[in-house]
Image 1 (cartoon, rainbow, N blue to C red):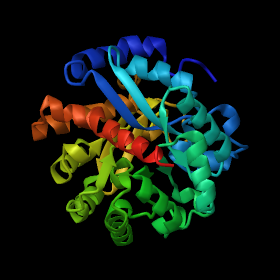
Image 2 (cartoon, one colour):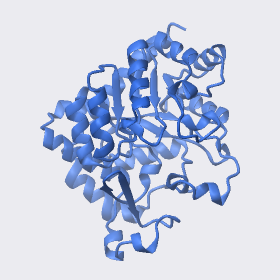
Image 3 (cartoon, helix red, strand yellow):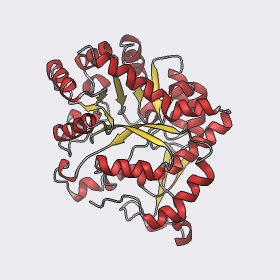
Length: 351
């Protein structure tokens, strides 16, 4: 695994000028990234070519060490102090327990704050033992760990009530990646999210990726249905749609929107188009889905920056449309998440 995950030449020629011209005056001095994956090569088990090509993110290597993360964040945000909320890969192809131990080591070293990737079959006693041992500030449950990729996976199947009770009592952070093909506009998801937020008000709930609503056709009905529930926050990790981010700022406000990168997947280079329900990735990478008819000219692809910078471009556009103040930008880019982490640490102290 290379120590440098960002090509130095492309960084100097493409990325750094974008940062200087577009983000340097816009971003605050301190940033908190609330959605980062860390994993070592040995944390992933054997995979088949069929699995790798079954879903486009599988072709982007998720294995990034804590040391590499520090290098990447320093490079992406020159002159800024960046801290990350990290968790291992919540995938049946990864060794979850080993990944959690690795995150716990990073927490003990002070390198990051961390979430525990949970298995739904764990007892409450096991969950509490792992919390105490690792000082995790919350949980990252995931529908793919139920053991099936069925279309209809209720939230309680991968985040069961006895796990919810712990998070509620200790005011822990829960980064919730919702399932079901209809994502944030799915009536069952909306009902279950509302129920979770209202019956477990102590949970600091973050809906990942704005509920996977990458297009307005998902975002408009979903955000409208939940805007009156004050206990729900959203991160916009890998959401590159300025229209969706603008809508989120208007529906939930800058106090409940959080910056997350989804590193290392956000180190892809390219752009994204949005058409109806579809989002279309364009990249210069050698991916099976990056077919010849999708490719742009060599000159266009040479100007591709990182998806993370495209995400920041979308947020900057949305912030300008809404008229966010610098203080509100600071809240979204870090202060909101930092306050949530401090609240969770206070809860952990009661264990």
